Length: 254
Image 1 (cartoon, rainbow, N blue to C red):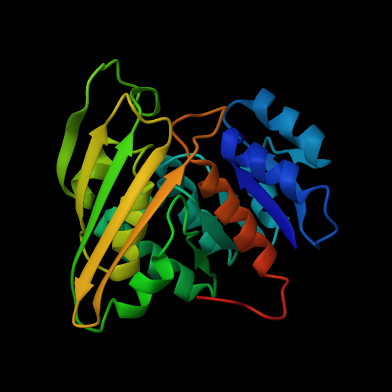
Image 2: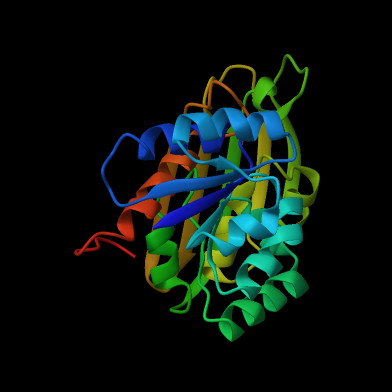
């Protein structure tokens, strides 16, 4: 499977350096970034090509992995899916725009393309998907991050946001993809609280789901990426796991 990557930052580096050394049938063939030097540096590690022409990359890969930004999803996903190429999308916040979500789904169906959204920086997404249409009453996410992770200069705990996921991703487009991922999984605009806390050194996500099935609660305490504190290491690992799963005979979970 030939893969093209959009965005050559921290997540792309982790994915590439993990995938390339293994003989797993996955080739990181093309890398595309608005900063061509970043693309060239990562291409040299991957043994791939730094793409100057986006169309050339799409035409020569089986799957495109986006790990750049919600704006990149909006700009490039219609073309990728329109050419019948599958996509893995990391910047799930773009899907909180309902019109965009419905349009991109229509394009994918028309061209027999698949869109894959990794679980990202959280655990428990399989459970939320399982109960989404079976009496799920409410889902709440409380995210707690350090000031550095949120780009804030604050020396005491403070609630930065409390409201719906659709509004949270507008205010924190690079920090709160988990809210969008959960919302897409259960097809509702979940409740979100974002707390900045100088006492924590991890990105903490606590999910509570209640319904006719009962109740469950998960807590994920992720170390942020050293190269980009806005991103949890687990987000990159979930994309690596998803890529590898395409070549596996037996699949565990959903």
